Length: 268
Picture (cartoon, rainbow, N blue to C red):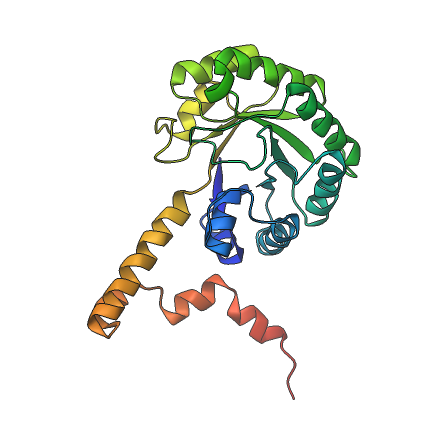
C-alpha cells in the first residue's frame, strides 16, 4: 500500500503516519507544485527534484510516476538515470501518446505496443541498480478494451517490465481478469472519482495485486481545506474561528524535527 505524496511535507506526514512505502504522484506534483492540469506540463527536472525532496525526508521505498518517459528512448534512458539518482525505488512509464491525459478521462490515444516495448527496453538498459523497478502502465482498457490491455501488458513484460499497472479498470471482475492474464506483480490505482470503484487495499490483495497506490487521496483533502481556510479568512478577516483545525506551532515543529536541527546547529 503506497499513499500518494507530492512534496517534502506530504512525504514527512505519510512516513510519520506509518507508511512503509510511498508513491510520488505526477498529478499531485503538477497540480500542487505548478497549479496546472496533469497533461505533461511538468518536466523531468521538476519530477527529479520532487523525487529527491521526498526521498531525503522519508527513508522508505518510493515509486514515482514518470509519465511517458518525457520523450522517446533517449529521453527514457535519461529519465531512469535521473530518477534513480534521486533515490527512488522505481518508476512507472505509460503508453499514452503525447499530449497525455489523466488516466481516468476519455479521449486518450496510445503509442503502438512496439514503441512502448522499445521504451521499456531502453529503461531496463539504463538501470544502474538491478533492483530499480520499471513498472509498465497501460491505458489501453478505455481505448482497445480489456483484452487489448492484457495483450499489451504481456508484450511489455516480454520487453523487460518488472511489473504492470493497468489504468482505468472499471470493476473487480476486470481486475481479476487482468490478474489471470498477466504473470508479473501488478499495481492497482485506487484513485477517487474515476472509473475504478472504491475498494480497500485488502480487497486488491485478494484479487492478486501486490501494490496499491492512493495517488490523490491526501491532496484532495488538503485542497478542500485550503479552499475553506482561505474562504473563511477572507470573509471574516481573522483566523480565530479556524484555530482548532490547525496544527499548532509545537505540532508543526515536531513534524519537521525542528529540535534535531536546533541540536546540531552551531553556537557562536
